[in-house]
Amino acid sequence: MSAENVRAQMRKGVLELCVLRVLGRGEAYTSDISDALSNADMLVVEGTLYPLLTRMKNAGLLTYRWEESPAGPPRKYYALSAEGAALLERFNAEWTAFVTAVDSLGIGSVDNNGKNRVHHEKDVGHSTGGAVVSSR
Image (tube, rainbow, N blue to C red; front, side, top):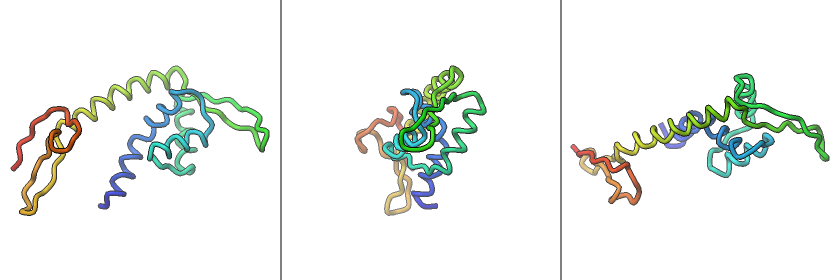
């Protein structure tokens, strides 16, 4: 599996959280949501975003309003519902716990002899949660 395939799967797994975070900053038009995701290197195509927004709206996580556009059809602006805001809080807590758990495992690699190695935060220049993982 290529690194890009892994990255794409990881993006799909956190896309709902990312949309909630974008809308947690305030209401947004679909292209604004897409731009925010692209700017965060969470590239997503509109064919993925529209069905996700519809599912989230149908689940009661989002509300929307229509606004006339001077340059075309009316625009639909999305915002978090109270339920969506509460879910965002829960997701943020879960995300923090998840990242901490993954970071606690260190960053592993294989050396030239095929043996597993673990890089610790002092080796890689960022936090791994302070965990010490023995190499084999």
